[in-house]
Image 1 (cartoon, rainbow, N blue to C red):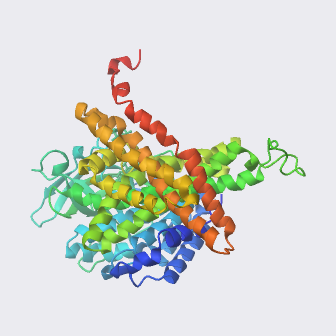
Image 2 (cartoon, rainbow, N blue to C red):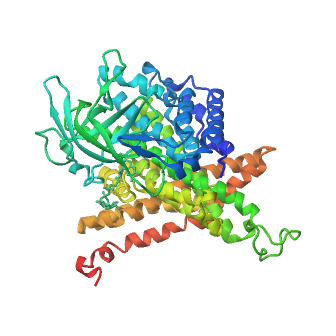
Length: 598
Ligand SMILES: Cc1cc2nc3c(=O)[nH]c(=O)nc-3n(C[C@H](O)[C@H](O)[C@H](O)COP(=O)(O)OP(=O)(O)OC[C@H]3O[C@@H](n4cnc5c(N)ncnc54)[C@H](O)[C@@H]3O)c2cc1C
C-alpha cells in the first residue's frame, strides 16, 4: 500500500479548526511562525513520507532488524532514509535554538510525525525516541550535559532511548532494580539489565544516548527511590567527539509481532559510566518529561493506524467487485458492484475515517496545549498544563485502541486478501497492536485518567474541560443545523460529571471501584472528547457551506456527514460504558481466583 498524506484534512484541522496562525501569534516565542513556513514544511514532510518512507514500510517488516554479536543492522534503506530525515532538519524542528534547534512549535512536529509515522512507523520510532531524550536533557540536564549531548542529538548524528523496563518491572517501575554506584569523580557505575528498549541498538547514528532509570545504594524503596542517568553508548571526549566504548552492550533483540523494522533491545549495563540527570531519587518525575512526549507520540500511532486502514480500505472498496447493491445495481455495466456500495463495508470505512480525522483533531489539539506549556506564561501556561494532563491519557489509550479497531476493519474490508501479507493490512494490525501496550498500557492510562487526573484533582481537571464544552454548546444552542450535535454533546457533558461523581461514591465504599470503572471511563471520555471536536469541525464545515460559494463543497459536506456518522453510529457506545460502570465492580471481583477454571 502506498501512503498518501491527507494534506487537505491536515490543513483543515491545523489551520481552520485550531487556527494555528492565531495560536502562534498569541505566544511570543512563536509569533514569527507564519503560515507559509508551516505549509512548506508540511509539503516537504508529505513528499518525504510518501516517496521515501512509505516504500520502505514493507521491507522493514519482511527483513526486519538483524542482531550480530552486539550490533544491530537495520533493514535495507532505513539508514539512508534516516540520513535524509536529518538533512531535512526534522530532528531539530522543535528543539531549543540555543543548541541548534529550529525552535518551532511542538504542535508542528506532531503534524509532521503523523505523516512520517503513518508512512513507516518502525522507522519513525528511531528519531521519535530521540525527541523525548532531547526534551529530557533540555529540561533537566546541567549546562555541561546540555553542551555535551544536545547539539549532536538535535542534528540527528546521535540518537536517544528511554530505558525504564526490566524483565520483572514494566507498569510498576517502583520495582526497578538496576543499580547506580556513586564514584569519586562524581559519575556513577550502572549495573543491571533493561529489556524492550526501542532503538536501543542500531547502525544509524555514531552514538546512542540512553536515558536510564536506576537506584542509588541508599535509595528508599518504590518509586521515590529511583534516579535518572545519562549513559552514552560511547563516552564523549572533552572536545565533544566520540570516545571509548562504555559498558553497555546489546545482548539480543526481541522477535516480535510487529514493528520489525525497529530494534527492541535487551541492554546489559555492566559497570557503565552514567551521569546523574535531575535530583537524586526524583528520576521518575524527570522521566515524565520523556513519557509525556512519548505518550503523545504513541497517540499519533493510533491515529496513524486508523488513517492507514482507511486509505487502504477505501482504495480496495472502490475497486473490489462483489454482489449487487440491495437497492439495485449501481454499476450495471460491471459483473458486480464495488463493495463500497454495501452498508456494512461503509460502516467499517466510516468508522476508520471518523477515528482518523477525529484522532487528528485530538492530537493536534494536544499539540497546541503542549506549545503553550513550553512557551506561554502564567495562567495560560498553567491551564494548558492541566488540559494536557487530562487529555494525554485519553488520547494515548483511546486513539490506540480505536486505531487497533480500525486496523482490523482494514483487514476485514479486504476479505481473505486482508490476511495476506502483500496488501499491508495485516502488517498494520501487527504493527499497531503494541501501541496499546507500551508507554503505559490501556489499563494503566485509564487508571491515570480516572484515579490521578480526575479524582486526584477532585474533579478540577475535568471541570476545566467540561466548561469549554458547556460554553461551546451554549454558544450554538440556537443554531438549528447544529442541534443534532449540540444536544447529545451537552447531555453527555453533564453525564460525564455525574458519572464521575457516582464512581467517587462507589470508591468510598469499595477501593476496587476505581480499577473496575477505569477502562470503561476512559472509553466514555474518549468518545465525548471526540464528539466535542467533531461538533466543532461540523460547525466550521457547515458555516463554510452556508456562507460561501465554496469550490470545496464536497470536502465540507463530507465533514458534516462524517460528524453525523460519528454521532449516530459511534457515540451511542457511551451508553454501554455508563451501564457497565453503574453495574459496579462486583461482577469482576465476586469470583474467587480458584473458581476461574476447573
Ligand atoms: C516492542 C516494545 C517496545 C518497547 N519499548 C520500550 C522502551 O523504549 N523503553 C522502555 O522502558 N520500555 C519499553 N517497552 C516496555 C513497555 O513499556 C512495557 O511492556 C509496558 O509498560 C507493560 O509492562 P509489562 O510488559 O511489564 O506488563 P505488566 O506491567 O506486567 O502488565 C501485565 C498486564 O497487567 C496489567 N496491569 C498491570 N498493573 C495493573 C493495574 N494496577 N491495574 C490494571 N491492570 C494492570 C497491564 O495493563 C497488562 O495488561 C516496550 C515494549 C515492547 C513490547
